[in-house]
Each structure stands twice: as C-alpha cells, then as structure tokens.
Length: 178
Image 1: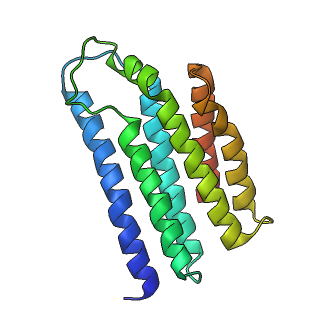
Image 2 (image 1 turned 90 degrees about the vertical axis):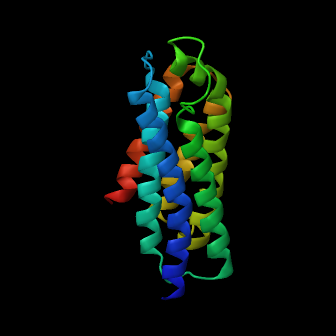
C-alpha cells in the first residue's frame, strides 16, 4: 500500500464511525417510540453527510501532498466531522420527556453544533489554503461557508440555522460535482 492509501484507510475508519453513529441514531429514531419530528437535526445530519462526501472526493484530488502535516490535517478534519456526526442526531437511548424530543434537542444543542461547524470550516480553510492556496475555488468556497456558519454559534434562530445548513449542503454538492 502507498502512503496515500494508508492515509485514506485511516480517515475512512474515523469517518465511517461517524456515519455509523449517525445512521444508527436515525434507525432508532425511525423504529423507536413515536416522536414529533423537527427538521433541524435531520438537516444537520444531511449537511454532515454531504460534507463528508465532499471531503472524501477532495482528498482524492490532492494525492501528491503526503507530508506529516497532511496526516494532522486529515485526522483533525475527520475527527471534527465525527463530532458533528455524533451531534447531528440525538442519542435514541437518551430519556425523553415529551414527543417534541427533536425540537428540544435542537434547543439544547444549537450552540454546540454551530461551534463545531465554525471550528471545522476554520480548520478546513487553513488546510485548503495550505494545499491549493488562496486562489483556489475550494478555498473561497470554504471561506464563504465559514462566514455563513459563524452566526449559527451565536443565534438560536431556527430559520438562520436552516438557511446555513442548506448552504452547507449546496456548497458540498458544488465541491463534489465541480
């Protein structure tokens, strides 16, 4: 195996654990006791999943950059995405007091998830600058997403969170199909 294949295997393990956690939570929410759904945690999960796919495709495009800093950037970015995956949907085994479980989850977690998005995009912007420089489309797209997600750590406004996550999903799709 080449060093690049070792790196991708390592990143796949971290990202696979995050996707597994998110899908397991979704499965238990779908098959568990009846709850009233709220779109925000589901949108968080969709944004995380599309961002993981975009990151995966982006990593294939930069195969030649394999210094130690690439392993640090890759493992940190993957770890942040794992935390986002774990935070996107609630733990289905947690005690519930009402049928508005997902709305209460959003009310309890909006700042944490928003802060994770800010740290993720700030770190990813730094990494993209190292790889493609300031002139690359990817760097500008990630920088724009950083500006979009900063208010998610500062406001509980569900409509802003919705718009921000839709833009994160659109950005990930643009980066994937560019």
